[in-house]
Image (cartoon, rainbow, N blue to C red; front, side, top):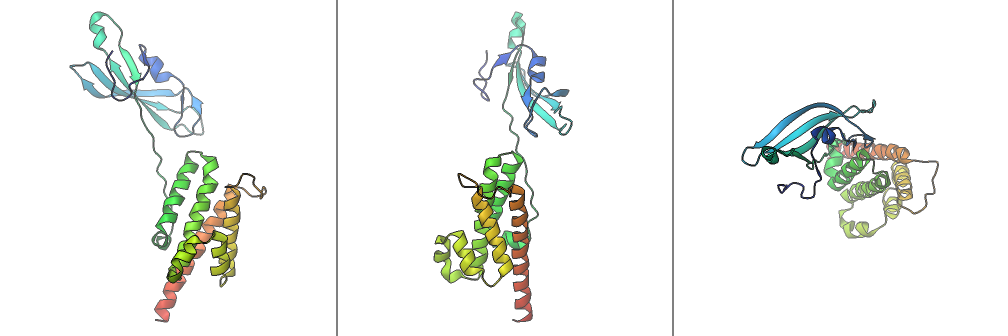
Length: 234
């Protein structure tokens, strides 16, 4: 049996249909099912070693998903000459989700760290990593608020960096009551998802997402207003 550089310990079988149709976890909806087989295509063939790599195009069988899936495997037919059946080994195939955001341009420019953490949190949500979502939003909120405050308080950079998020909100957002309220709501609920025991059981991750979307919109509007003020009052 030939050594497989892609998956050294891959289990080999002698029935191609069994490999293709064996139960699997859908990479889109993360549920176990036996996929429907659509078609199989050859993607690579090595005549000397008689190794063929194939991709089976499958489909999730859940009616609310029905998304295409690929199963990548290798056929070793070297033994056929001696009357032995071909061996089949599944090869690793990774799926990565793409996360798109509609964050305003001025928010992206204000806080790249917020954008990165926010995107990673949305990715965790796509992969149903529910225990990480709230913590990711909480970290994102801190970057967004601190970077917004630092924009007009550069001289206090070190001091602000070392402050807790609540202290920054209490001390630097006092001139804008609505923004301060939004910031505190996001911070309190975000903290709730990072602690051992949650306190605000009447709120869930969707509430945090609503608060955060409004916070992003509010800060974006504040940045636009500051730009307009400079234009009108140079």
